[in-house]
Length: 368
Image (cartoon, rainbow, N blue to C red; front, top):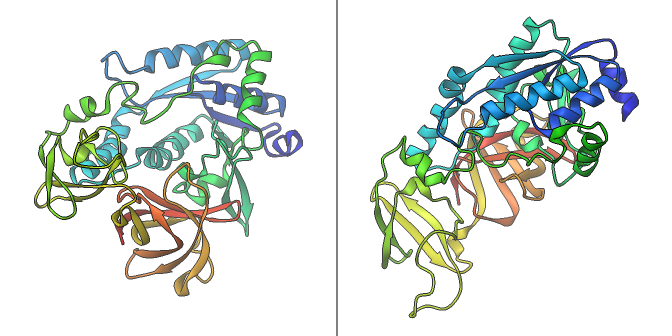
């Protein structure tokens, strides 16, 4: 592992995206040990002074890391680009009753878009981040592979990054386990060795999700019904719910029903109705999906037009699911699964794999 990284980065200027967390800090150590000329670049993407934003603390942690490791720190503010290219998309998707994943767009548009352009202005030969994934060259083009730690692999969130960007990117953590990362940070005396990992959507932080969304989109309460039309109560707004959700429905413990949990199984935007069902209802499961805005890493895989046999994930933590992917009209594709999939949510991404190689992905549009 160390030898491979050395071959990639030795005597090259590597611009590392330094967040102020333990992962990117250890990436800096590994790059230094491999002989790279490391420059850290810290991004500010969100600036709200609301008590939840940790931007100021993260910048100070980045300063401390760079001081300890004796590497230069650059700071750039991409807040405007983030709002225009990521946050607007996030709000538009929720307006349509879908469940977006802004981290995918953040990687494509910001970290491997405007950030990459800025890194070149700093004289960078290569870009590096603290993601748990691996990059490589296949058939002369940049390629993406799963990280060695199956519990931390982040290739799902990186599937929309271009082959050109991947060809200029190294992921120093791709071959190691998360437990090793914290130990390395502790051994190096880094104060962030026990810093809590960031989770969820970066601009929401630790605040309640509904509270955040309501500041941008007006709530629109409506009926909560069973698939047969029985009214069970009122929902707070379709944007607050996702397919498969079972928490926060407020209809548990009904005397006239059994003890099985209730799930969101559908949304009717025209009538502003949330459809819920009890137990493992048929509407919770999908045999197929249609997706749009497909982005392959490089060219579309061979045989795609006639039906590509591969594996897919419809959510980050899911195991690989065998399927067949086939081209439809335009940029639409159809994915047919070997086994029925639970709680497939429009607006999320379906991401495709050939063993450990990530092929690309697409936005889930329709399920059935």
